[in-house]
Length: 136
Figure 1 (cartoon, helix red, strand yellow):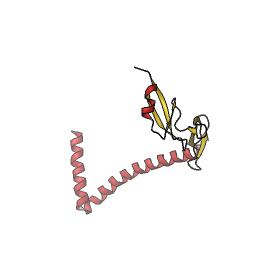
Figure 2 (cartoon, helix red, strand yellow):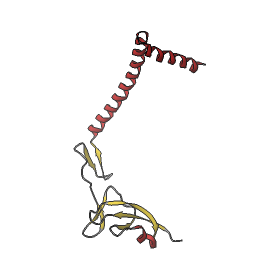
Figure 3 (tube, rainbow, N blue to C red):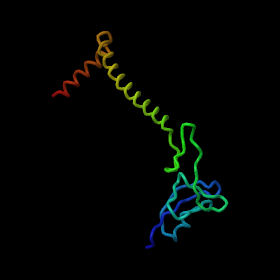
Figure 4 (tube, rainbow, N blue to C red):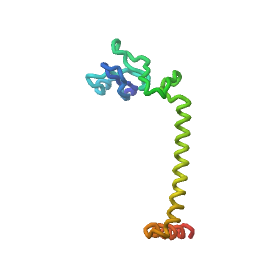
């Protein structure tokens, strides 16, 4: 059995990578469609493309996703700017805290309103009963 190698598949018209596969060298043709090009190697699918003129893999910087991103040359990836990432982190933390506070609020409101609303009273009674089960 021949040794399997890794190949990266490209679209020869756009130059964009399509994925990777492993197989023996004599099986490559069976894994490639007529409109695709395979090159030996595990090329970076996000930072490599095919030079349409030469049909060889070259470094590639994909289009910028939006103005909140900047190119990280070391990682060869777009990443959110530090201030945007910090803002998103603060927003996520604030939303988590709001959700926790609203859960507490809902319980307190239910308990206060239970006396005036039979549906809420039924829910509160069931919760009290289930809490007894937890304490046993």
